[in-house]
Amino acid sequence: NTRVLLKRRPVGAPVPEDFEIATAPLPVPEDGQVLVRHRFVSLDPYMRGRMSDAKSYSAPVAIGGVMEAAAVGEVVESRDPRFQPGDSVMNSMGWQQWAAVPAGKLIKVDPTEAPLSANLGVLGMPGLTAWVGLEDIGQPKAGETVVISAASGAVGQVAGQIAKLRGARVVGIAGGVQKCAFIMEALGFDAAVDHRADLNAQLDAACPDGIDVYWENVGGAVQEAVFPRFRDFGRMVMCGMISQYNIAPGADAAGAPAGPNLGPVVRKRLRIQGFIVFDSGWQRYGQFRAEMLGWMNAGKLHWREDVVDGIEKMPQAFIGLLKGENFGKLVVKVG
Ligand code: NDP
Image (spheres, rainbow, N blue to C red):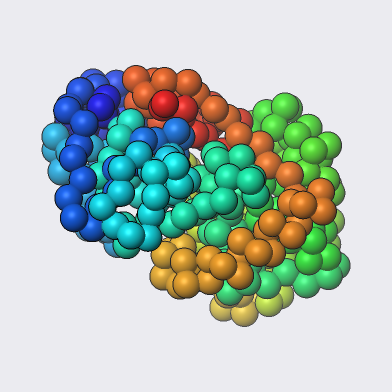
């Protein structure tokens, strides 16, 4: 069982030496547990937080511990009547090839509904995040302008398409020409803004009447450019701020972009709300999955994955995620 362990806590941007590739004997399931062989393991930005022992909404991964992650795979042995060998399952099982997992923590997935790896992206935690954040906070209405940052990524690509399906005009912000072409051509967004070029001029052109909903995935310079363009009663869905994740706590953020002036929040009666997908997301997983599968089967929802092959490539792939090297939902094929 090849696994990736956290060797030490990264300071600033993670480096390969922060991780250790190790092998362990196959885990043996106890009563009530299920032995799962992973096919795909998910890499997500939140994992940067789990590498740090700063106070957060979840406990950090221990030094020497297996990095946390969602995975999908097949049941090989079951010591719980709810699961049989051959069942496809998903849940949080770590950067490793095999896991013995308490049965109550697993969700059975139907491999005929969608490719297995889709359960880590469009039908998994990132898709659920997009759906919940729009339901609860963004609430896009027909004709409104919705701006999505990291728009070609796991959360952004779903959030933008759902906003379009709800009738909004959707502007995506992404890094580089290829990602911008993808969100226009494959996802049908109304406009694309490349944050590596002149952000302000492009936003002026793409949002002449201002912005009703901003889906925040990145923070920093992008947030600073978007913020003054809010219309009255705008909503800002604070999903994440990936541009800040490698800034060491306590370090002066020299070189990091200045934060925006949040004064207009009051004047424009804006609603800025943060959320974490697991607050109430998983309780609504059935409703989410049914709506998503409906759109997917009708050809109305597309998704792009960036598949890396080999568990030993996980540290480098994760390091790249924090620099925008992934193009689509990043998953690693491990078996
Ligand atoms: P993505 O698949 O979008 O990958 C990350 C993308 O972020 C990169 O491809 C890159 O896109 C962009 N990026 C990376 N570094 C920077 C930077 N320094 N400045 C600007 N953009 C950058 O990731 P996810 O869709 O999985 O996650 C998106 C956001 O959602 C993250 O902030 C994450 O933490 C958050 N999240 C929050 C959840 C919640 O419950 N609140 C749940 C899941 C995710 P590009 O090349 O286009 O710039």
